[in-house]
Length: 235
Image 1 (tube, rainbow, N blue to C red):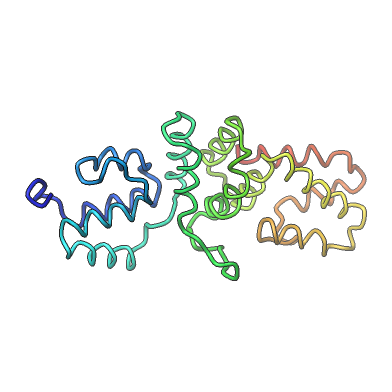
Image 2 (cartoon, rainbow, N blue to C red; image 1 turned 180 degrees about the horizontal axis):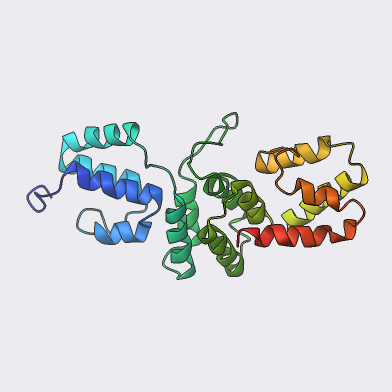
């Protein structure tokens, strides 16, 4: 391997790992590009495969890769990377499992706050909270809705997180329940706050549709229309 590819440097491996972690290259794209470096039956996580191949080629490469990935940004999923992966999924170039593997490679402990790990809060919500729970139930139509949402780049990430949740009918019904309960007893915000905090990391003060919700006190029958507006807000 060393004699076959003398021009390869650690920078090559670092760029490939970052391209995968950010999402700009899918696993099949990485494997196709490195077919002469990696075993054909490679099934491990991409960054591990690349790091192992780099180490085999040159012992110093491993230290370079570890140092680069520890001391620079650019090692978490990005919006454009998520769009690239969703487009690949809808073309059937990758599987749902490959999308999940990429989106959830970064794991957090139960007592660790996820907010702020990624620059894009909506992408962070998708990777940490939305996809791991719903990946088995999402239809192609719903994946297309999610793709359209992320392409739109709405100005309010809280609205994007809500729109994501509302693509799931069960989540929509949960949302309706807590919003109706609030309209019936607007002086009691604890239940609504508990739901919003657990689901989206916000409370009623930061809920971006609070003004519209309060305006529906005399018209609770319009709640479903409010949620439909919220679902389409970022689409």
